[in-house]
Length: 381
Ligand SMILES: NC(=O)c1ccc[n+]([C@@H]2O[C@H](COP(=O)([O-])OP(=O)(O)OC[C@H]3O[C@@H](n4cnc5c(N)ncnc54)[C@H](OP(=O)(O)O)[C@@H]3O)[C@@H](O)[C@H]2O)c1
Image 1 (cartoon, helix red, strand yellow):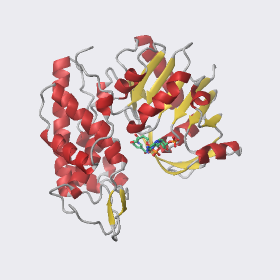
Image 2 (cartoon, helix red, strand yellow):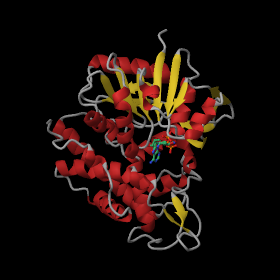
Image 3 (spheres, protein in one colour):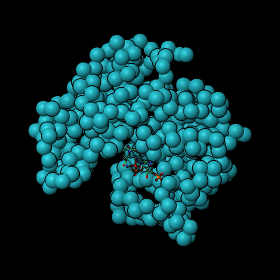
Image 4 (cartoon, helix red, strand yellow):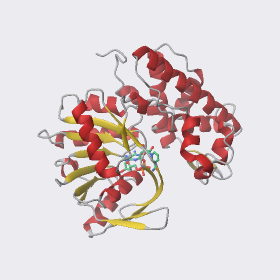
């Protein structure tokens, strides 16, 4: 079989885990692009990496190339997977774009592909017809406890992996992409018809922002207070946060319905967040009766801490302004939802309320999904 050359951009938890899993397969070469010198040095010392699986077993892998040099990482690649957070993707794409092959199809995707990766990639790779843009709806497995260059823990896996391509891609490219991803992940890869099915699937952007708003927003019980200890995101989720989440989930469904109707696209695969969580975690949720009880009683969510840092000059903790819950989920997730709703004259007051407060807590947006969201969408330019 012809070797498959995979370049993973981003040496975080998702990048490490996927790289190790791919190296278990025959005829797959894996390079990893990272800014972390520890990871590069560990590889240079002939080190291998280890994935610790939920059943206690381990997988070892020595990658073919680990480098901070974008050219070395991607110049031969057939498949490129971007695993950096949404707010870092633009700079990653700009770094690798000049070095991608122009001689063969290169399948360039993001895992996860939310926050409109198709639009970002289109804006950066407009004149590169051999590049095939794709995204995966979610990470194939959760990944945590990273020791850079050494090991990472694998959490629960998804039984189905949903993938979409940019609307510009041909049926033949989609089919070939599915074959490549099936080689890497097995027969669980399902192609979606429309990238909007990824972009409109509710997830972290509404989950994280609503809980933070419920905790420290103007009506939250911790408003302008210091937390005596770090809190768990979900088991200690405030009632107000769950209330906002339920409202934002509904608004996100309304947006989906309007887009589906006006653009004539089938978005029936996009479920409400509540349904997604209940279907994904099943019996691990002790009480599925309300959003609050789902979040508080899902055993898979136990012990996950909210992003907090020690407070300045005082004992205790505050929610971290520089957290990904703001830089990624608000600036690239909520901003996009509100802008899409605006283009259809749809009111999403709960999402807007949380977005506006979050942006003021962040002390303004430095960059956002509006930097690449097509100006004329939903009309074609
Ligand atoms: N981990 C999970 O289980 C999980 C679950 C659901 C969704 N996700 C999503 O998957 C994506 C990757 O998550 P992850 O958990 O793998 O992230 P991570 O462990 O924090 O790794 C992200 C990597 O991105 C690169 N990076 C460059 N600039 C950065 C910046 N300013 N902030 C943060 N990272 C930066 C770094 O890689 P280099 O140093 O190598 O350049 C970093 O290691 C995110 O969109 C996340 O929301 C992850």
